[in-house]
Image 1 (cartoon, rainbow, N blue to C red):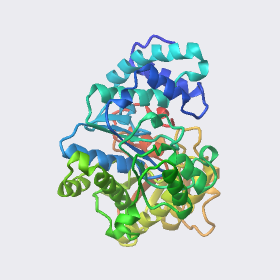
Image 2 (image 1 turned 90 degrees about the vertical axis):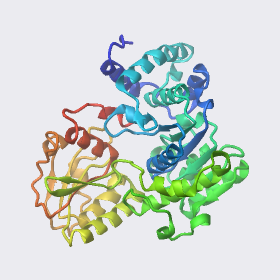
Image 3 (image 1 turned 180 degrees about the vertical axis):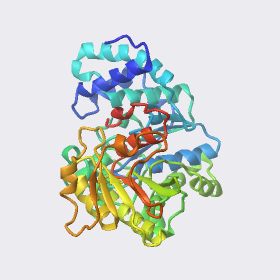
Length: 434
Protein backbone atom coordinates (compact mmCIF):
# COMPACT_ATOMS: atom_id res chain seq x y z
CA UNK A 1 0.00 0.00 0.00
CA UNK A 2 1.45 3.43 -0.94
CA UNK A 3 2.04 6.22 1.52
CA UNK A 4 -1.16 8.26 1.45
CA UNK A 5 0.59 11.60 1.02
CA UNK A 6 -2.18 13.45 -0.85
CA UNK A 7 -5.77 13.19 -1.97
CA UNK A 8 -4.62 12.22 -5.47
CA UNK A 9 -2.67 9.25 -4.06
CA UNK A 10 -5.63 8.21 -1.91
CA UNK A 11 -7.98 8.56 -4.90
CA UNK A 12 -5.77 6.35 -7.06
CA UNK A 13 -5.49 3.77 -4.28
CA UNK A 14 -9.28 3.69 -3.93
CA UNK A 15 -9.55 3.25 -7.68
CA UNK A 16 -7.22 0.25 -7.47
CA UNK A 17 -9.73 -1.49 -5.19
CA UNK A 18 -11.88 -2.11 -8.25
CA UNK A 19 -9.80 -5.23 -8.83
CA UNK A 20 -10.20 -6.52 -5.27
CA UNK A 21 -12.98 -8.83 -4.21
CA UNK A 22 -15.35 -8.34 -7.14
CA UNK A 23 -17.92 -10.68 -5.57
CA UNK A 24 -21.30 -8.99 -5.10
CA UNK A 25 -22.32 -9.39 -1.47
CA UNK A 26 -22.68 -7.83 1.95
CA UNK A 27 -20.32 -9.92 4.08
CA UNK A 28 -17.42 -7.46 3.69
CA UNK A 29 -19.52 -4.49 4.78
CA UNK A 30 -20.89 -6.37 7.77
CA UNK A 31 -17.34 -7.09 8.91
CA UNK A 32 -16.19 -3.53 8.17
CA UNK A 33 -19.08 -1.99 10.12
CA UNK A 34 -18.29 -4.28 13.01
CA UNK A 35 -14.65 -3.17 12.98
CA UNK A 36 -15.79 0.47 13.03
CA UNK A 37 -18.09 -0.03 16.00
CA UNK A 38 -21.27 0.27 13.94
CA UNK A 39 -21.46 4.03 13.41
CA UNK A 40 -24.59 3.48 11.27
CA UNK A 41 -26.51 2.69 14.46
CA UNK A 42 -25.95 6.14 15.98
CA UNK A 43 -28.50 8.04 13.88
CA UNK A 44 -31.94 7.39 12.32
CA UNK A 45 -31.94 6.41 8.64
CA UNK A 46 -34.31 6.58 5.68
CA UNK A 47 -33.15 3.85 3.28
CA UNK A 48 -34.00 4.34 -0.42
CA UNK A 49 -33.82 1.64 -3.11
CA UNK A 50 -35.22 1.42 -6.64
CA UNK A 51 -34.30 1.31 -10.31
CA UNK A 52 -34.87 5.01 -11.00
CA UNK A 53 -35.70 8.04 -8.89
CA UNK A 54 -33.59 7.16 -5.87
CA UNK A 55 -31.37 10.23 -5.97
CA UNK A 56 -34.18 12.70 -6.60
CA UNK A 57 -36.29 11.20 -3.82
CA UNK A 58 -33.32 11.35 -1.46
CA UNK A 59 -32.73 15.00 -2.36
CA UNK A 60 -36.38 15.82 -1.64
CA UNK A 61 -36.31 14.05 1.71
CA UNK A 62 -33.07 15.78 2.66
CA UNK A 63 -34.45 19.21 1.79
CA UNK A 64 -37.64 18.72 3.78
CA UNK A 65 -35.83 17.66 6.93
CA UNK A 66 -33.21 20.40 6.59
CA UNK A 67 -35.90 23.05 6.12
CA UNK A 68 -37.46 21.85 9.36
CA UNK A 69 -34.23 22.66 11.15
CA UNK A 70 -32.75 19.17 11.34
CA UNK A 71 -29.12 18.34 10.63
CA UNK A 72 -29.24 15.90 7.71
CA UNK A 73 -26.76 13.43 6.25
CA UNK A 74 -27.11 12.49 2.58
CA UNK A 75 -25.38 9.47 1.04
CA UNK A 76 -25.83 8.93 -2.71
CA UNK A 77 -24.01 7.39 -5.66
CA UNK A 78 -22.52 7.78 -8.12
CA UNK A 79 -21.19 11.34 -8.10
CA UNK A 80 -21.28 13.68 -11.07
CA UNK A 81 -17.97 15.54 -10.86
CA UNK A 82 -16.56 15.43 -7.32
CA UNK A 83 -16.13 12.27 -5.31
CA UNK A 84 -17.22 14.10 -2.16
CA UNK A 85 -20.71 14.64 -3.60
CA UNK A 86 -21.48 11.13 -2.37
CA UNK A 87 -21.31 12.21 1.28
CA UNK A 88 -22.97 15.44 2.40
CA UNK A 89 -24.12 16.98 5.66
CA UNK A 90 -26.64 19.78 5.17
CA UNK A 91 -25.64 19.60 1.48
CA UNK A 92 -21.98 20.40 2.20
CA UNK A 93 -19.96 17.81 0.28
CA UNK A 94 -17.02 15.95 1.79
CA UNK A 95 -13.82 17.84 1.00
CA UNK A 96 -10.79 16.17 -0.56
CA UNK A 97 -8.81 16.72 2.65
CA UNK A 98 -11.54 14.94 4.61
CA UNK A 99 -11.57 12.01 2.17
CA UNK A 100 -7.80 11.73 2.56
CA UNK A 101 -8.11 11.71 6.36
CA UNK A 102 -10.78 9.02 6.28
CA UNK A 103 -8.78 6.83 3.90
CA UNK A 104 -5.76 7.13 6.17
CA UNK A 105 -7.93 6.08 9.11
CA UNK A 106 -9.80 3.26 7.38
CA UNK A 107 -7.04 1.66 5.29
CA UNK A 108 -5.23 0.05 8.27
CA UNK A 109 -8.53 -1.37 9.52
CA UNK A 110 -9.23 -2.81 6.09
CA UNK A 111 -5.75 -4.33 6.00
CA UNK A 112 -6.32 -5.94 9.40
CA UNK A 113 -9.58 -7.47 8.18
CA UNK A 114 -7.82 -8.76 5.05
CA UNK A 115 -5.28 -10.55 7.23
CA UNK A 116 -8.17 -12.68 8.51
CA UNK A 117 -9.50 -13.31 5.00
CA UNK A 118 -8.30 -11.50 1.83
CA UNK A 119 -11.81 -11.81 0.38
CA UNK A 120 -13.11 -9.52 3.13
CA UNK A 121 -11.01 -6.50 2.14
CA UNK A 122 -13.55 -3.70 1.56
CA UNK A 123 -14.26 -2.45 -1.95
CA UNK A 124 -14.28 1.19 -3.07
CA UNK A 125 -18.04 1.46 -2.51
CA UNK A 126 -17.72 -0.07 0.93
CA UNK A 127 -15.02 2.47 1.79
CA UNK A 128 -17.32 5.29 0.72
CA UNK A 129 -20.23 3.78 2.67
CA UNK A 130 -18.06 3.50 5.78
CA UNK A 131 -16.91 7.11 5.35
CA UNK A 132 -20.52 8.23 5.12
CA UNK A 133 -21.52 6.43 8.29
CA UNK A 134 -18.52 7.72 10.22
CA UNK A 135 -18.96 11.26 8.93
CA UNK A 136 -22.65 11.31 9.81
CA UNK A 137 -21.98 9.95 13.29
CA UNK A 138 -19.21 12.46 13.97
CA UNK A 139 -21.29 15.30 12.54
CA UNK A 140 -24.08 14.30 14.92
CA UNK A 141 -26.75 14.33 12.23
CA UNK A 142 -30.36 14.14 13.36
CA UNK A 143 -31.21 11.84 10.46
CA UNK A 144 -29.50 10.40 7.37
CA UNK A 145 -30.99 9.70 3.95
CA UNK A 146 -29.09 6.76 2.44
CA UNK A 147 -29.40 5.70 -1.20
CA UNK A 148 -28.83 2.06 -2.11
CA UNK A 149 -25.96 1.58 -4.54
CA UNK A 150 -27.07 -1.54 -6.43
CA UNK A 151 -30.03 -3.79 -5.77
CA UNK A 152 -30.75 -3.83 -2.06
CA UNK A 153 -30.47 -7.22 -0.42
CA UNK A 154 -26.70 -7.48 -0.83
CA UNK A 155 -25.87 -3.78 -1.11
CA UNK A 156 -23.29 -2.40 1.33
CA UNK A 157 -25.79 0.12 2.69
CA UNK A 158 -28.09 -2.70 3.83
CA UNK A 159 -26.37 -2.92 7.21
CA UNK A 160 -28.61 -0.07 8.40
CA UNK A 161 -31.78 -0.53 10.44
CA UNK A 162 -33.93 2.30 9.08
CA UNK A 163 -36.93 4.23 10.36
CA UNK A 164 -38.56 3.65 6.97
CA UNK A 165 -37.56 1.89 3.74
CA UNK A 166 -38.43 3.24 0.28
CA UNK A 167 -38.69 1.46 -3.08
CA UNK A 168 -39.03 4.12 -5.76
CA UNK A 169 -39.46 2.08 -8.95
CA UNK A 170 -38.76 -1.33 -10.47
CA UNK A 171 -37.60 -1.84 -14.06
CA UNK A 172 -35.24 -4.12 -15.96
CA UNK A 173 -31.70 -2.91 -15.25
CA UNK A 174 -28.48 -4.56 -14.06
CA UNK A 175 -30.17 -7.80 -15.10
CA UNK A 176 -26.88 -9.70 -15.12
CA UNK A 177 -26.69 -9.18 -11.34
CA UNK A 178 -30.25 -8.68 -10.11
CA UNK A 179 -32.18 -11.04 -12.37
CA UNK A 180 -33.99 -10.99 -15.70
CA UNK A 181 -37.58 -10.52 -14.54
CA UNK A 182 -39.35 -7.73 -12.67
CA UNK A 183 -40.18 -10.16 -9.87
CA UNK A 184 -36.54 -11.16 -9.40
CA UNK A 185 -35.39 -7.54 -9.41
CA UNK A 186 -38.17 -6.59 -6.99
CA UNK A 187 -37.05 -9.36 -4.67
CA UNK A 188 -33.51 -7.95 -4.64
CA UNK A 189 -34.69 -4.36 -4.13
CA UNK A 190 -37.08 -5.45 -1.36
CA UNK A 191 -34.12 -7.04 0.37
CA UNK A 192 -33.89 -3.75 2.30
CA UNK A 193 -37.23 -4.50 4.01
CA UNK A 194 -36.69 -5.08 7.73
CA UNK A 195 -39.11 -6.80 10.12
CA UNK A 196 -41.68 -4.33 11.39
CA UNK A 197 -40.17 -1.32 9.58
CA UNK A 198 -42.62 0.63 7.36
CA UNK A 199 -42.09 0.54 3.58
CA UNK A 200 -43.17 3.17 1.05
CA UNK A 201 -43.43 1.98 -2.58
CA UNK A 202 -43.86 3.93 -5.81
CA UNK A 203 -45.90 3.11 -8.91
CA UNK A 204 -44.46 -0.36 -9.44
CA UNK A 205 -45.49 -2.77 -12.20
CA UNK A 206 -47.99 -5.36 -10.96
CA UNK A 207 -45.45 -8.20 -11.09
CA UNK A 208 -42.97 -6.21 -9.01
CA UNK A 209 -45.57 -4.90 -6.55
CA UNK A 210 -46.82 -8.43 -5.86
CA UNK A 211 -43.30 -9.47 -4.88
CA UNK A 212 -42.84 -6.43 -2.63
CA UNK A 213 -46.21 -7.09 -1.00
CA UNK A 214 -45.23 -10.73 -0.37
CA UNK A 215 -41.93 -9.81 1.28
CA UNK A 216 -43.51 -7.07 3.40
CA UNK A 217 -46.18 -9.50 4.55
CA UNK A 218 -43.61 -12.16 5.47
CA UNK A 219 -41.59 -9.64 7.50
CA UNK A 220 -44.48 -7.87 9.14
CA UNK A 221 -43.49 -4.57 7.51
CA UNK A 222 -46.39 -2.14 6.98
CA UNK A 223 -46.59 -1.19 3.28
CA UNK A 224 -47.70 2.23 2.08
CA UNK A 225 -48.28 2.40 -1.67
CA UNK A 226 -48.18 5.80 -3.33
CA UNK A 227 -51.24 4.94 -5.42
CA UNK A 228 -53.27 4.26 -2.26
CA UNK A 229 -52.62 7.83 -1.17
CA UNK A 230 -52.66 9.67 -4.51
CA UNK A 231 -54.24 7.32 -7.08
CA UNK A 232 -52.70 6.60 -10.50
CA UNK A 233 -53.01 10.06 -12.10
CA UNK A 234 -49.61 11.64 -11.54
CA UNK A 235 -50.97 15.09 -12.33
CA UNK A 236 -52.74 14.85 -8.97
CA UNK A 237 -49.39 14.26 -7.30
CA UNK A 238 -47.39 16.94 -5.45
CA UNK A 239 -45.42 19.40 -7.56
CA UNK A 240 -41.69 20.04 -7.38
CA UNK A 241 -39.37 22.46 -9.14
CA UNK A 242 -37.44 19.55 -10.71
CA UNK A 243 -38.38 19.08 -14.38
CA UNK A 244 -40.16 15.98 -15.64
CA UNK A 245 -43.53 14.48 -14.79
CA UNK A 246 -41.81 11.54 -13.10
CA UNK A 247 -40.55 13.92 -10.40
CA UNK A 248 -44.15 14.14 -9.18
CA UNK A 249 -43.95 10.44 -8.32
CA UNK A 250 -40.75 11.03 -6.39
CA UNK A 251 -42.38 13.96 -4.60
CA UNK A 252 -45.34 11.76 -3.69
CA UNK A 253 -42.94 9.15 -2.32
CA UNK A 254 -41.28 11.80 -0.17
CA UNK A 255 -44.65 13.00 1.11
CA UNK A 256 -45.70 9.46 2.01
CA UNK A 257 -42.45 9.01 3.95
CA UNK A 258 -43.19 12.24 5.81
CA UNK A 259 -46.65 10.98 6.71
CA UNK A 260 -45.19 7.72 8.03
CA UNK A 261 -42.69 9.62 10.18
CA UNK A 262 -44.87 12.59 11.10
CA UNK A 263 -45.62 11.48 14.64
CA UNK A 264 -41.92 11.34 15.51
CA UNK A 265 -40.61 14.38 13.62
CA UNK A 266 -43.35 17.05 13.82
CA UNK A 267 -43.33 17.90 10.13
CA UNK A 268 -45.52 20.68 8.73
CA UNK A 269 -47.47 20.17 5.48
CA UNK A 270 -46.92 23.76 4.33
CA UNK A 271 -43.16 23.49 4.86
CA UNK A 272 -43.05 20.19 2.97
CA UNK A 273 -44.78 21.80 -0.01
CA UNK A 274 -42.35 24.73 0.11
CA UNK A 275 -39.32 22.44 0.35
CA UNK A 276 -40.38 20.43 -2.70
CA UNK A 277 -40.41 23.65 -4.71
CA UNK A 278 -36.83 24.44 -3.66
CA UNK A 279 -35.10 21.06 -3.96
CA UNK A 280 -31.94 20.85 -6.07
CA UNK A 281 -30.72 17.68 -7.78
CA UNK A 282 -28.47 18.30 -10.78
CA UNK A 283 -28.56 16.56 -14.14
CA UNK A 284 -32.22 15.54 -14.07
CA UNK A 285 -33.57 17.21 -17.23
CA UNK A 286 -31.71 20.34 -16.21
CA UNK A 287 -32.11 23.22 -18.68
CA UNK A 288 -29.37 25.85 -18.91
CA UNK A 289 -28.09 28.38 -21.44
CA UNK A 290 -25.06 28.15 -23.76
CA UNK A 291 -24.27 31.23 -25.84
CA UNK A 292 -27.94 32.04 -26.30
CA UNK A 293 -28.90 28.43 -26.89
CA UNK A 294 -30.77 26.10 -24.56
CA UNK A 295 -28.72 23.13 -23.39
CA UNK A 296 -30.31 20.28 -21.46
CA UNK A 297 -28.51 17.74 -19.30
CA UNK A 298 -30.38 14.54 -18.50
CA UNK A 299 -29.30 11.27 -16.90
CA UNK A 300 -31.99 9.00 -18.38
CA UNK A 301 -30.09 5.74 -18.76
CA UNK A 302 -32.35 2.68 -19.02
CA UNK A 303 -35.66 1.41 -20.44
CA UNK A 304 -37.83 3.05 -17.79
CA UNK A 305 -35.85 6.27 -18.19
CA UNK A 306 -36.44 6.08 -21.96
CA UNK A 307 -40.18 6.35 -21.38
CA UNK A 308 -39.74 9.58 -19.46
CA UNK A 309 -37.07 10.83 -21.89
CA UNK A 310 -39.59 10.58 -24.73
CA UNK A 311 -42.13 12.64 -22.80
CA UNK A 312 -39.49 15.27 -22.00
CA UNK A 313 -38.22 15.46 -25.59
CA UNK A 314 -41.75 15.78 -26.95
CA UNK A 315 -42.44 18.62 -24.53
CA UNK A 316 -39.14 20.31 -25.42
CA UNK A 317 -39.97 20.24 -29.14
CA UNK A 318 -43.40 21.67 -28.41
CA UNK A 319 -41.95 24.47 -26.26
CA UNK A 320 -39.32 25.19 -28.94
CA UNK A 321 -41.93 25.86 -31.61
CA UNK A 322 -41.28 22.56 -33.36
CA UNK A 323 -37.48 22.91 -33.45
CA UNK A 324 -35.92 19.51 -32.90
CA UNK A 325 -32.83 19.27 -30.69
CA UNK A 326 -29.32 18.17 -31.53
CA UNK A 327 -28.76 15.18 -29.23
CA UNK A 328 -25.43 14.10 -27.78
CA UNK A 329 -25.73 10.59 -26.35
CA UNK A 330 -23.48 8.10 -24.58
CA UNK A 331 -24.86 4.88 -23.09
CA UNK A 332 -23.68 2.11 -20.74
CA UNK A 333 -24.60 -1.29 -22.17
CA UNK A 334 -26.35 -2.48 -25.33
CA UNK A 335 -29.69 -3.33 -23.70
CA UNK A 336 -29.98 0.22 -22.34
CA UNK A 337 -28.98 1.67 -25.70
CA UNK A 338 -31.67 -0.38 -27.44
CA UNK A 339 -34.30 1.51 -25.45
CA UNK A 340 -32.71 4.98 -25.53
CA UNK A 341 -31.37 5.46 -29.07
CA UNK A 342 -34.69 5.01 -30.93
CA UNK A 343 -36.35 7.52 -28.58
CA UNK A 344 -33.60 10.07 -29.19
CA UNK A 345 -33.79 9.50 -32.96
CA UNK A 346 -37.56 10.02 -32.96
CA UNK A 347 -37.19 13.61 -31.73
CA UNK A 348 -33.67 14.66 -32.76
CA UNK A 349 -32.52 16.82 -35.64
CA UNK A 350 -29.06 15.27 -35.37
CA UNK A 351 -27.38 12.57 -33.31
CA UNK A 352 -23.81 12.71 -31.99
CA UNK A 353 -22.61 9.57 -30.21
CA UNK A 354 -19.80 9.65 -27.67
CA UNK A 355 -18.10 7.12 -25.38
CA UNK A 356 -17.75 8.05 -21.70
CA UNK A 357 -14.53 6.77 -20.15
CA UNK A 358 -16.17 3.73 -18.61
CA UNK A 359 -15.61 0.08 -19.45
CA UNK A 360 -19.30 -0.53 -20.17
CA UNK A 361 -19.70 2.36 -22.64
CA UNK A 362 -21.20 1.42 -26.03
CA UNK A 363 -19.07 1.97 -29.11
CA UNK A 364 -20.19 4.25 -31.94
CA UNK A 365 -20.96 1.32 -34.22
CA UNK A 366 -23.26 -0.24 -31.59
CA UNK A 367 -25.21 2.97 -31.15
CA UNK A 368 -25.37 3.76 -34.87
CA UNK A 369 -26.83 0.32 -35.57
CA UNK A 370 -29.76 1.10 -33.27
CA UNK A 371 -30.82 4.25 -35.15
CA UNK A 372 -34.09 3.53 -37.00
CA UNK A 373 -33.78 3.38 -40.79
CA UNK A 374 -36.12 6.31 -41.25
CA UNK A 375 -33.92 8.80 -39.38
CA UNK A 376 -33.00 11.54 -41.87
CA UNK A 377 -30.61 13.68 -39.83
CA UNK A 378 -26.81 13.50 -39.60
CA UNK A 379 -25.21 10.90 -37.32
CA UNK A 380 -21.79 11.80 -35.98
CA UNK A 381 -19.09 10.23 -33.84
CA UNK A 382 -17.13 12.45 -31.46
CA UNK A 383 -15.23 12.44 -28.19
CA UNK A 384 -16.34 14.38 -25.14
CA UNK A 385 -13.05 16.29 -25.17
CA UNK A 386 -13.66 17.34 -28.78
CA UNK A 387 -17.19 18.54 -28.09
CA UNK A 388 -16.38 20.24 -24.78
CA UNK A 389 -12.71 21.27 -25.00
CA UNK A 390 -12.77 23.96 -22.31
CA UNK A 391 -14.93 25.65 -19.72
CA UNK A 392 -18.11 27.05 -21.27
CA UNK A 393 -17.18 25.88 -24.79
CA UNK A 394 -19.10 23.48 -27.05
CA UNK A 395 -17.77 22.91 -30.57
CA UNK A 396 -20.84 21.18 -31.95
CA UNK A 397 -22.08 23.12 -34.99
CA UNK A 398 -25.54 24.32 -34.18
CA UNK A 399 -28.19 26.95 -34.73
CA UNK A 400 -29.29 28.89 -31.68
CA UNK A 401 -32.97 28.17 -32.38
CA UNK A 402 -32.38 24.44 -31.80
CA UNK A 403 -31.85 23.10 -28.28
CA UNK A 404 -28.93 20.83 -27.44
CA UNK A 405 -29.68 17.75 -25.31
CA UNK A 406 -26.94 15.73 -23.64
CA UNK A 407 -28.35 12.43 -22.37
CA UNK A 408 -27.87 8.71 -21.91
CA UNK A 409 -25.81 8.22 -18.76
CA UNK A 410 -24.97 9.92 -15.49
CA UNK A 411 -21.33 9.18 -16.31
CA UNK A 412 -21.64 11.12 -19.56
CA UNK A 413 -23.13 14.13 -17.78
CA UNK A 414 -20.37 13.99 -15.17
CA UNK A 415 -17.60 13.97 -17.77
CA UNK A 416 -19.19 16.81 -19.71
CA UNK A 417 -19.64 18.91 -16.59
CA UNK A 418 -16.06 18.23 -15.52
CA UNK A 419 -14.89 19.86 -18.75
CA UNK A 420 -17.69 22.41 -19.23
CA UNK A 421 -17.94 23.90 -15.73
CA UNK A 422 -14.49 23.42 -14.17
CA UNK A 423 -11.45 25.59 -14.87
CA UNK A 424 -9.60 22.36 -15.60
CA UNK A 425 -10.86 18.74 -15.43
CA UNK A 426 -10.71 17.25 -11.93
CA UNK A 427 -10.29 13.68 -13.16
CA UNK A 428 -12.54 12.08 -10.54
CA UNK A 429 -14.86 10.58 -13.14
CA UNK A 430 -13.21 7.18 -13.24
CA UNK A 431 -14.42 6.63 -9.67
CA UNK A 432 -18.01 6.99 -10.80
CA UNK A 433 -18.71 3.44 -11.96
CA UNK A 434 -18.67 1.87 -8.52
